[in-house]
Amino acid sequence: MNHLDKNAKKSLGQNFLRDKNIINKIVNVFNIENEKVLEIGPGQGDLTKELLKKAKKVLAFEIDKSLIEHLKNEIKDLHFELRDQDFLNVNLNDDEFKDYYVVANIPYYITSDILLKIYRSFW
Image (cartoon, rainbow, N blue to C red; front, side, top):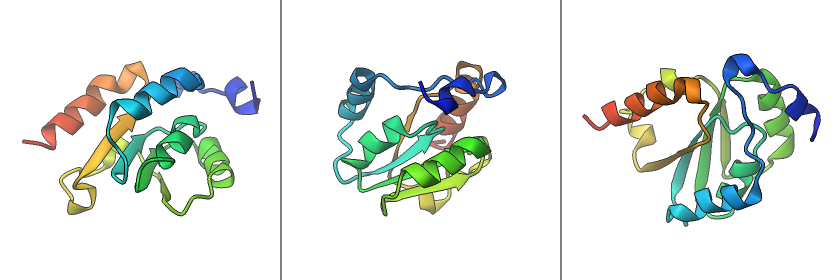
């Protein structure tokens, strides 16, 4: 357990995904080879790193400043873009987000809001 595990913010519903088996199942359930992936809340980047092994690009949205700094230092992949932005404030109908797979280890308390936002972007 590193220092970030100890500082998981309950107010943000943080629960870091660290289990390699679960991470691999998530990555392998989708055919993301050479695809663009939008990741909501990359946390410490364990899932992100595995996504980058297959995806053409990973665009991640994170709001925790300490995790943003950690991710900037930890992941130096040219196919990784990190935004300091709340996903709930993103306009998914913007052409920029066309053809992205959405992947996330979502905190339970905002799961409904996130799923509704994604579903509504199709209507």
